[in-house]
Image (cartoon, rainbow, N blue to C red; front, side, top):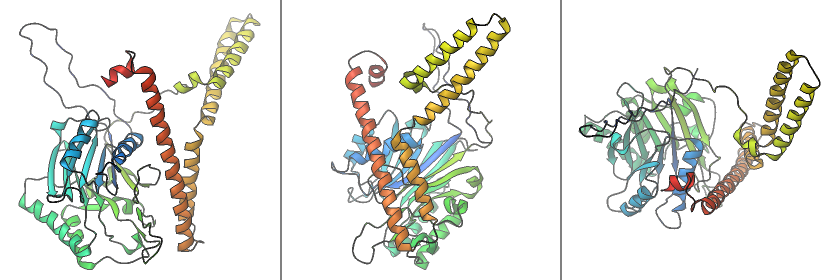
Length: 433
């Protein structure tokens, strides 16, 4: 079974202050046993009007516990890249590759969530493969080499340029034999290998597909989602055109490839529609586990902390405890006290679980119901392609609107908490300073 390794600190105890005592050497933070990789095309986020996408993106990384996010169409200049690094310096490490002569065009970036991937800036190696199109990062993880190598790509839309792009990557690696081979390749490939990954179904240009296949075979990379879901049809991009030949077009051009030797250690291959990022692409994710790590379960169940401020639960708790005290006073048998205590704990546990289940936010419950309905619509063979597209598009948009509403509420709650607590020395003030 899969599990999480103990989060034991590797920091040495600080020696007592005094003359001649050397400071302890810095040790590399211990990585977790689960690593989540995500990828999304954000349709440009290099202007003041689109700058909010970075906040939405990083919030999504926190919510989904994504360790590394590959981002395409960043449109970042060096100045904006520096601004983002300053803003999110504490928890996020950003590496961006821009086109040399037009920084506001194209762009591919890799964001490392330090809350999930335990590393420092010095622990990361960066390789710019093709400016504005391909970048690779090496991060600490539990591999034989101690590193995991992620290649992020944003391939050209033109089929001929797309072919040239894959050949450029091969040439770059050939020119630098010391570079490590990628363990993952993630991004917007702007082409499909299989006609079923496009609606309406159509084959990619043969020479373009052959160039990509050469790269994949060279580094033993496989399409993880397709390998896990051989008979399923899902899409990561859909056209928003309302007129013309592209109405209703959709495809699975966003993909994550994994080194074949690592595939057995991967799980959770998915296409996520429940994200608040403003784009016509969906978020794709995959998880990699350290299978050899010891299994550690969830531990003993406990009453959720939010119930300690829940009025209904506190009223029920008062009634249950009062009843137990009355019952104990009415019996003189000492052995009965232990039975009453056992019954009390059981009743508290059962009522806590029941109320906690009822207290799931209505918005989150609605999102889960819509996601389930969306999967049913995708798999309904009685629908025509047009009907399926219309229904799934409507459900996807409703899910995204609810996610936006939830994100706005979280931000409002955070702003309110800051206004109330930022002037008082406490946890909020200490974390900010």
